[in-house]
Image (tube, rainbow, N blue to C red; front, side):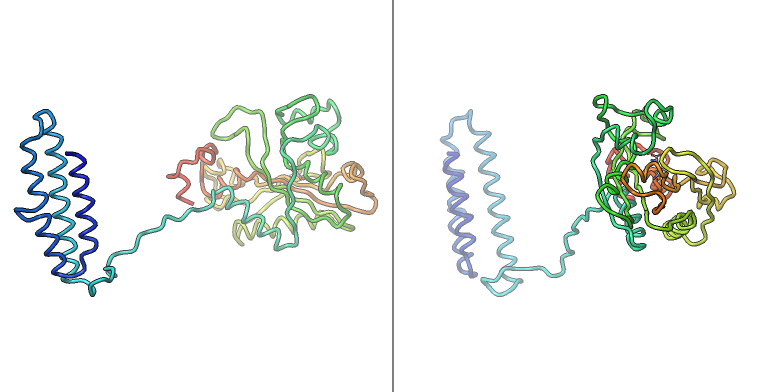
Length: 336
Ligand code: DAH
């Protein structure tokens, strides 16, 4: 009985599809849907189906009846109002189907924008490995062996000499080893630190490193470049200041601050009432670092800087929990 029902359904669908005129349709109606039609006959045959099977068969048969009638009615309505017979009916008044658009992750958007600003100032983009040796991550950057400066960063060591890079600064070394000055590069990438995860710190995050080495590069080039960047990224009216600090690989070194763009320097939750936000570390490349890559520090000078992308993005978008950038909750991501 099941086979029969299926057979009738297939035959009906084929006949209905083939029907291309009013009289064809009438033929289909008489053959399947009329009182003496094939479907009515099936109902007749139900009488001899064993009682145990009746509920299931009845259901199948009823479905066949209503669906066939519906398909028939639909085709008939289309045939009488729609386009000429044989043409597909297209309703041009239906609204279009929306296509959901993907978008870039807010961290990628931030990196792309920063890259765009620096490439427009003549910088190119370089990358380096995330698994580094102690030499590239520390030694070549003038962190002396066993010097407490190495404790500034909590490192994931893979073995005694191999580690997950704690910053993008080792890419400076690789870049300078591979080319002669002038060097003008920015180096975005992922870094790792062995820290407890919280709203304010993550075990992995991103940095963008910058490096400019040539003859006659001075601290005023550093300031000019970084101020031009900050104006483009944060807006023309942003105020800035540089404060002396220490990094083993630069001398002198300076942290750059901008006036808080939320409170315009008045003091708020974002800047923790300071009115200023630290956005990057920078400095003049230490002569030892130049020597380590075979550059003559008497002839060449340069500046370098490094900034944390999650920090910059969180300040810019007012995100107060860095973990949100890694949870990939679409309700969060859709806001960018
Ligand atoms: N590597 C530093 C860090 O991870 C950031 C940094 C500071 C990079 C000063 C630089 C620089 O190139 O000149 O904290």
